[in-house]
Length: 84
Image 1 (tube, rainbow, N blue to C red):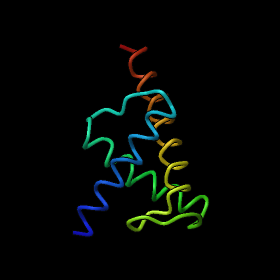
Image 2 (cartoon, rainbow, N blue to C red):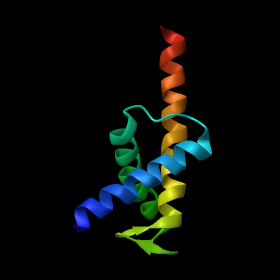
Image 3 (spheres, rainbow, N blue to C red):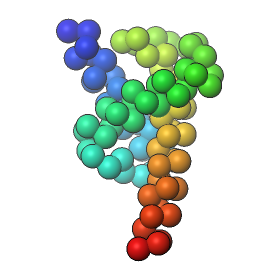
């Protein structure tokens, strides 16, 4: 049950990051979950583990990390679109 809860929270973190940046994450729900997990990892590596904790995610660093990830991915995707 803990793994399912982590998937849900990871998806919500990815969705919130996409809403903050204003860009859709490729892959829909799966993309949101991946962005949430990678963003949480990135945020905890950069900012540490502080703030409220939910399903093993430090929410504030996870959202900040996911926002950074989505922003960087949107820049990369925009670069690929311009070259083709």
